[in-house]
Amino acid sequence: MSTLARSISLTIAVLVTILLLLAWPATLHQGVRAQVPYEGFPPERRIPVDKVLPHPGAMPGIPLVTYGLTDCMDGDVLVRAVFVDSDGSIDANLYSWNNPSDPGNPYGTQEVDTYMQRIRSQYDFSWSIWAPRYSKQVKFYVEKNVVAVPYEPILHASGDGVWERSALSTLLGIPVYDEFSGARQWAQNGLTVNQFGRSFNRSTVIFFVLNTSASQNFADGSTSFAYIGGPYGAVRRFDTFIFEDTTIHETGHLFWALDEYASWCSAHGGCSSDWWWDRDCLFDHTPVTNGNCESCNPGSVVCMMKYGSPTVCAYTAHQISWNGTALSSPVITNVKCPGCTSGGKLLVKGIGLDSTCSVFIDRVEYAAIYRSDTDDLAVKELYLQTATTYEFRVKRSGDGLVSDPYIKSF
Ligand SMILES: [Zn+2]
Image (cartoon, rainbow, N blue to C red; front, side, top):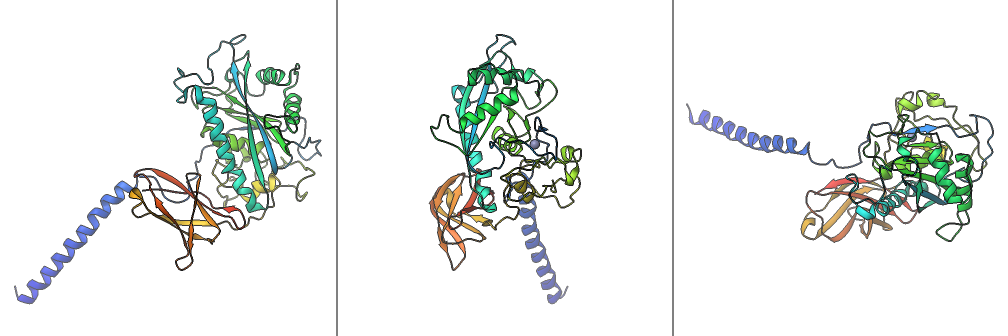
């Protein structure tokens, strides 16, 4: 072999070795990557959520007598949360809230308070941060009520109303013979008389029901449910989604939002749903279609009323009375934090960032420095944990708009 040939073959051997060395860890890395948490926007969880029931006492398309309770989602909203708990006097008492020996309860005597906290936070970081994008303001106040009933609610069919009437009789202090007018009355009372000692613009009722797993449904096979436009909904402790996500989805129904997943909307008029009622407070009185229904819209987008994603699409916004055209919120495109496991600087890249921006890390707000030369946000001296998934958001105080969550672990 000539010197030239030897040196060429040596060069080739070296190159191949380098390529192999480069490719080998990349292959390994990819294998690992598939198992670590994703980065960026949370993926859609494609499981139908719940059961929606028509607004009691109304037919689609016919003008409706409303009570000003959940006609439109705006202003200060009272959510009267009712944790119903069987006392064993008619049905056997199978489950109880705050029971430390319940294997489904990791929170001991703090179970109800823990769920209350999670619900409040989820309202703040779902409907409330989305409203400004549609030029609205909404703030939810969740009131805690634990009420004994003689029935074990999950053993009953959704819609039979028996434990609801019992709970509402206790709450109102008078016998309730109709769960719809009872729930409406109690919501209405809450506009001025409530645990917060203040008045509200809107008010609604959500019952919370004990079960042992997501597969334990109501007696008719129903999962969590809500009546379109109110007056109430019911959320099971264990459901398709986590407790607080189901709660905010059902809240959408109480404010007239319709399901957009195929199994429901394909059976209810598809994209031109006739499940629509006019209300005085709507920003326009054009019948609202259900255009994000995935069975008829090939371009259907992720949305809170489709599978419980943390976004509010324009059709849902229209249904709950928000203006249908969204303003542009900041968008996070990348998050880096070199050295953050030992006190480093977090850098957030994105679109629409400016000097009024702050950064939320797992819903805690941090002041940020906007660096105009690199067009990013810096948060100094952060200590983040390895192998932990964090949720990042950017809030632009100039117009109050908040980005979608960006998920990343370090
Ligand atoms: Zn639903």
